Length: 437
Image 1 (cartoon, rainbow, N blue to C red):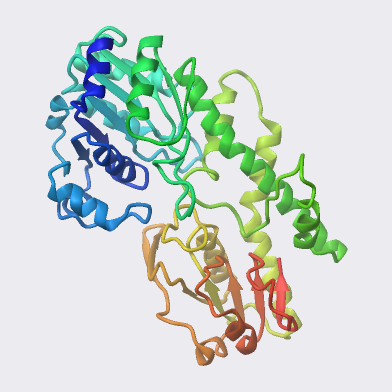
Image 2 (image 1 turned 90 degrees about the horizontal axis):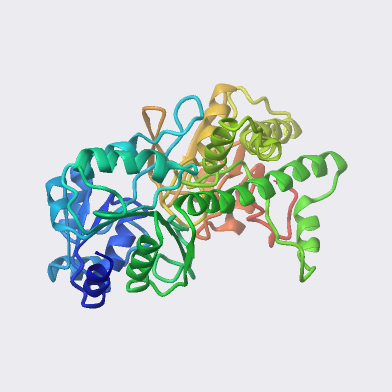
């Protein structure tokens, strides 16, 4: 099986299947197809499947022209019918792994995908999970599902591994193709073959590890590292406000050290598909071993309370104007979780808006990338544009996401007060109406 698959990879005879056509799956499917491998995308959402088959892109990290050409040339197609799994040689599972209502891992998408794949899994297939998850998912959850549903044996009839996605939406330098990849599989043969498959597609280094669990944990380490360091500077920010010192200036001074320090910055909370979630997966799994990850949990507490802290700061800014929070008109700029993208997954701005509304304020939002968002079962629509007359109409402008398209001078010249949670206005000289987080 090993040699057969290596030969098929070399001759570009592998047919690729990608389960889940979201921020991770679609860019991966496009790269596989661009590398010369016929690719089939699987998704339960008919809208995504129809968009792909029409060559219409909906993911920022995918080039519109690339998708259209691949579809036109029959190198990429999509379907809701998992029966086509029987036709593929390599399956990448790229489905969401959110948290449930109790902040515990929700691996239902992985489980359901495994069940769907297992029904049509055939001999000589590689299966790789790319979704961020707790150590043990591949071997303890996915492997038994695939074996039971297919009647095949892992390592003898099919190969199974884990290779964590490293998608950073909006990153101008690193994309799916050139970001280094980690691969851990069950058995040396599986690791070699799966790594060879990725090397045939990607330009980034492929780093092989001894097991799926190592690969699963290293992905959580990547994002927990960021979670902890962001928690550190968020706590420093709260202390600096009491001390009358700019945390931003402190951080900029510290980063002049050329070794032993990496700059992280405060903000209204954490957002995105990984950093706010992955530490919860690790702390949940750690409890199985009677171990409490105290440093990680403390950083999560700090980061999770940043929206509440920002509301407290909004109170202080309004008080300086002798304006009550109740019935104050507030405009939140940006609901995306980071600048210059249209992704609002886990964005702290959504919680911030919710809290401001709960305090009696009248809150609007503007985001050039997100005209409307859905939160807790309800749709929220933003204002269509910002210009001087609009800005003057609000008691407070809160910059929650620092999109580069904002006219910052116009904002400063027309706003009654601005609470800048991202240091977006750092180059504005006149700061009489600016309060910095």
